[in-house]
Length: 296
Image (cartoon, rainbow, N blue to C red; front, side, top):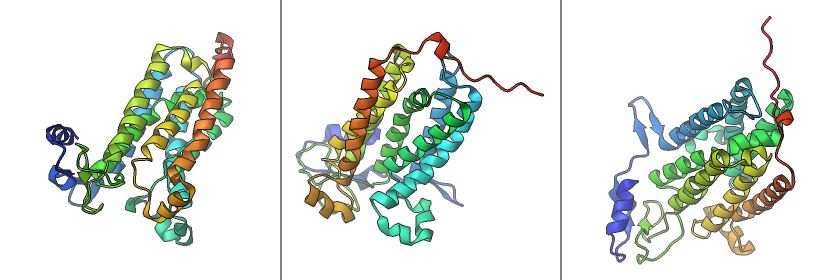
């Protein structure tokens, strides 16, 4: 990634950059198998999320105990993977529903963030209901770390040379020719997403979580994440190339599938933020976590 930034800085704006000149690999070759960067991004994001939530639970006012966090990340991992794949089939590749074998081949790529979000939300709802926890506060403790996975995932997309942006001119210093994107320079929209959906949103949420009382207003951090992601994705979609099978849909409706899917996210985010701000912060009597079971 640093090599790309250095190349963009040195580029005079007349000759586009070439992805192949960065000599990037699509994974770590162990001989027996290749660990894809995208898989490593998922794994690192989950590990970071578990570490951050576990650390946050040590401070007063946490909405759950460590045992709840353990269950949460087990079910959320399943929800993200299953939901992400089913969402991809539903929103982007409907034909996969007619081929269960192809649908199950996760290693071939194809995951939807929106589907993964739905799967993760259902997992949090299940753990919250079963443990008698405040659902929105549980969501707040998870939402704050999701942008890390988005940051790593979009960087992995760039390293893989996939999900490139729309055609632009070589006058854009960072315009790049991708091997599967034809001979014309394109926006490296994966990096736009990494910065907006990942880095920027991560910094905002971490500041809200640790430097303000936002985590004591149920749903506030979740609302900022959902709405913030929706706004960032809506903007970046103007620079991201629509999936080939959905280009006609984008031309007909005026918006890409990704943009249509972010509209309800923006609205839900606004509702959650408004709801959280209109209510008083949770008090000490509302911060109790279900007691740990007493060993027999």
